[in-house]
Amino acid sequence: MSNDTFICDNIGVNDQGHLTFAGRDTSELAAEFKTPVYLMDEGRIRHNCRVYTQAFKEHFGGESRPLYASKANSFKYIYKIMKEEGMGIDVVSSGEILCAYKAGYDLSKAYFHSNNKTDEDISFAMELGIGYFVVDGFEELYAIEKEAARREIKQNILLRITPGIDPHTYAQVNTGTVDSKFGTAIETGQADEIIQEALAQPHINLIGYHCHVGSQVFAEDVFERAAVVMIKYTAHIYRDYDYMAQQLNMGGGFGVRYVDTDPYLDVSKKIADLAEAINATCEREKIPVPTIIMEPGRSIVADAGMTLYTVGSVKRIPYYKNYVSVDGGMTDNPRYALYGSKYTCYTANKMNEERGMNCNVVGRCCESGDIIQRDVLLPKETERGDIIAVCTTGAYNYSMASHYNKIPNPPIVMITADGSAKEVVRRQTYEDLIALDVD
Ligand code: LLP
Image (cartoon, rainbow, N blue to C red):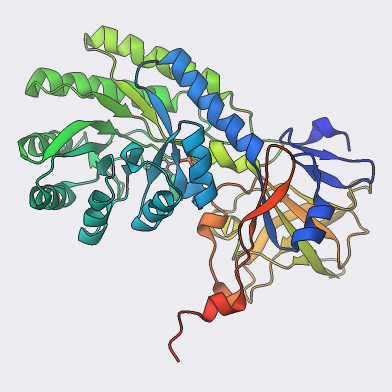
């Protein structure tokens, strides 16, 4: 296979016919760190951050900035990278807040999401000096007011508004329509009400609005349409209630390539198009352009990740199917089981063999649905001991991992800028898995 046939240019093949990732031989990495293992390419993460930061500088300027949606992959080292790259962060739980804090990330740059923040979450976030709450609804607004009053502070918030845009992605990640558990809808009039309520709270400082229409979005003009709705809405609130939002957070959601047939999205161009739509609408509505925030997760880390497994068996059922079982599965990557997500898989140590065997790559859990990918073409020679690589696993794999069947989670091995590889999250042990059990 030639190197230009891979879905991302940090993947290649070396002279030994081994798959390479971030310039490193994956068979060697598998031997050194054992499998299953999540690999991450630090250079690619930083590159993806810079695509956003530069495009924001060029097309929006001022205080406008991208945040990393850390639900995509949350561990200490990644918050250090985000700090160095000048990225804000989006966090969704006290767990992510603690992780960022312990990594030395300045939480005044963090936006706290979630449709259900408990009183403990609210208090914990304020205690650590969170920059902004993204408030989902009325009850949360009052809970934040109460805690801010108790602390005698004025808390910055954004309100999550549902713009009524369908992003045409899979149902589980579609959040822009009125019928959503997230946010307060414009269409029902409730958004107007919550804004008035927020403005009336003495310990709340309403900074602006947030919207997020969905994830893995490729459809042409979804972000522009959402932006137009939000800018028009901002103008309506200004005219009717004399409140001008300073910030508009457009959420995350740009799609990434998992397989050859996925389109390639030019993020710089998408941001330029978004800026054009926002500027033109602000001009038409005669309002100043707000500070624009976006919070990409997947498009920062997905193609910076690859998972390596070892084959345990190749089961051939005559006239039916072939099954390649690996030493991980839905516990480290539940995305096929949950969404039927597509992935590109290779036999990493046999890249020069013809890929003539159609098979399902399956995990080791006691469950038929434990599938990494169906109908994968791998070499007929694939056998026990070979290394299977699954590409583009940097987003929503480690962060969605489980312990089903008491299977420990793989480590994260970061390939740093100088090409060295180091564990930034260690492998979970069986002892870790039973550490919480009370004897
Ligand atoms: N902002 C908000 C408010 C979000 O809810 C999300 C994703 C993002 C930003 C980041 O979106 P991204 O740029 O990563 O598309 N587990 C699913 C994805 C869930 C996305 C949830 N929210 C998956 O594995 O596909």
